[in-house]
Image (cartoon, rainbow, N blue to C red; front, side, top):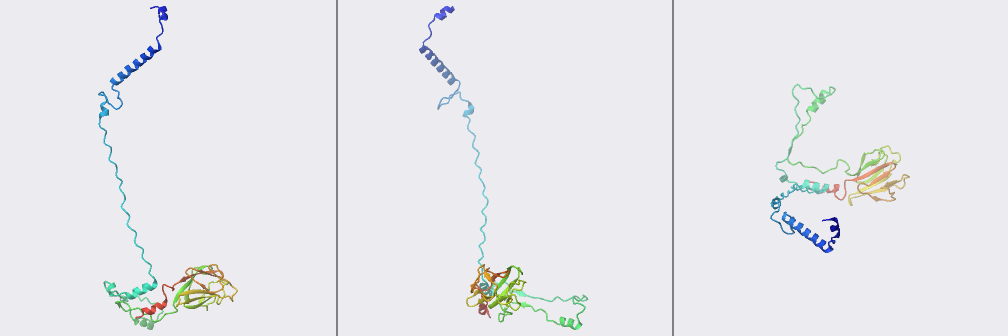
Length: 272
């Protein structure tokens, strides 16, 4: 065929071109189906065997082991006042002991020929007196406690130096009226070198066993000013535990022993 005949051939219509393209697409789709492609929702006979293999079982979940529970904390021991402890000591009977308590103190004899522990200056008479001294007696059974007489004025509280000269020292407070001053003749002598404290009766601390209360009374006749918890009292002030009394350059912390929980007058109930 010549070039003139090709040029003279009429061009294909748009409709025939569309149909040809559609036919080619259908043929291509049929070839893809026969080659083993998957249809939507179906599987062909030529599907790979690997796809049909059953899935491996998922590993079992690992269970976390919890630590054992902590033991419960021990119950707090209730506080026991001094008076309750004394009553408990009085109420104890022989049933409290599996075996009757026995305390024995014996002086060990010196071996024969051993050197004497006494100094050389001790006379023979003194040595003989020492040898004749009574031996410590054995204590068997429940001891009897005597509470008939006080060895000295019973202490009811203390003043502890927490600032100024004498830091760390303390002075006892007794029942009744206690004068405070720098002098040795005071019932509560604060004699640690603070010259700004009056030598006599800078103030007073009173304890009454009837109502079991403590009062601080300043001596307003003195030129030196005292303070309780940084407040300058002009009359009697009730004292509570750890109140701080300032005199001159000294600070004194108040520490009570007697009070609502205990008083020495309770011992009269324990006398045998």
